[in-house]
Amino acid sequence: MSALAVSSGRLALFRVADFRRIWIVGLVLFTTRWLELIAFGVFTYAETNSAFIVSMVTMLRLLPMALFGVFIGAVAERMERRTALIGVVGVLFVGEGVLALSAATGHLAVWQVALGSFINGVGWAADNPIRRVMIGETAGVERMNVAMSIDVGANNASRMLGPTVGGALLAWIGIEGALFLGVALYVAGLATLLRIGHRNPVVARPTARVWATIREAVLFAWRDKRLSAILWVTVVYNLFGWPFTGMIPVIGRDSLDLGPQGVGVLASMDGIGAFAGALVMARWSRPETFRLSYVGGCMVYLATIATFALSPTFWTASLSLFMTGFFGTGYTVMQATLTYRAAPPEMKSRMLGVLSLCIGLAPVGFFMLGSLAEAIGAPWATALLAMVGVGVLATTGRIWRAI
Image 1: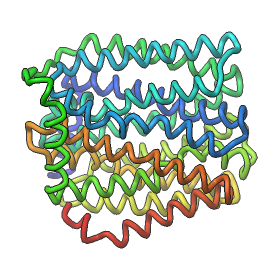
Image 2: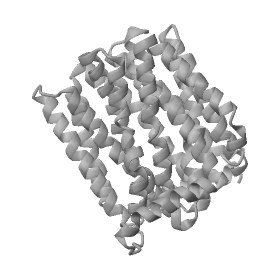
Image 3: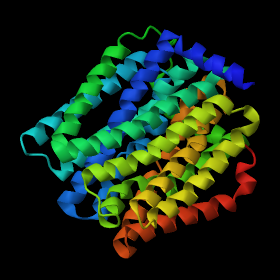
């Protein structure tokens, strides 16, 4: 596909009203997620002074993917997805509102932040099998890679905006400022959702067969070499790479001597790099480069995490995070794209649910990183875990070559 054709496809997708609205809802969810990630991390570290507890609070955001990812994928096949998404965003809105009121009255505690992180994680677990399947349905299989580049671009734009705004609000107002902004964003998301006209046909299936369909999906993914290879790279990324995000507030404060606003700016550099990477992917990604983007992006992402962790200055850390975001985008865009393309039509929601399950293994990585950070310090623990990930990926080529 030529660059001109990809560009035309991208513009055409934005002219599809329902695709555009689904994309906006994603932007809302992404922005609140990254806003909370920094706000919760800074708040928790200030309250506890424990890198392990910070890592565990961040881990709770990923735990629902392991607990509910496959189940949500199976149930999503039995539901009208727009209605389901309205329910998910509504629950997130209520949870954010409760946290905002607790903070405004001076009663916010770390356990409440941890619970809020878990609730947001339930919404995250539902994103792949519900909202991203809706993206595929409105864009079509042939334009899925372009659609995912645009969607990941929204995620990456929020990774620029969310941490910066979150850090500034923490410094100027306190955590309640970040939380009330999250409430306002969820209101905007719900208003946009109500205008979506797309409806998927609902296939009536016996409820008793939910577990049978889950088992069928997991076995299919295990036996299909392409899907198992895609999921293997996801496991490596989430065990050894993704957990580093929980250490950004710790490294920013202890190693680089930054305040909340500085930590927010530092964290946004990952998003700036990722946004640039998404623009490159949207314009030039082609099927023949999908494996290189996915596996190569993951490999470089892991390597640049190590350089960030051991960076001596704000500027070298910022450059490392920019590179982390830029190269990690290849992995991020291709993750759902490859899974969606490889899954049979009748299993797309379930396979994206299995993908969420693999992402949900990240809590194991968060636990390992938090424990290491308590023992040898956050910088060396982060660098060590990332380099182990590089080694695992480099020595398992016989698996991921099937992509």
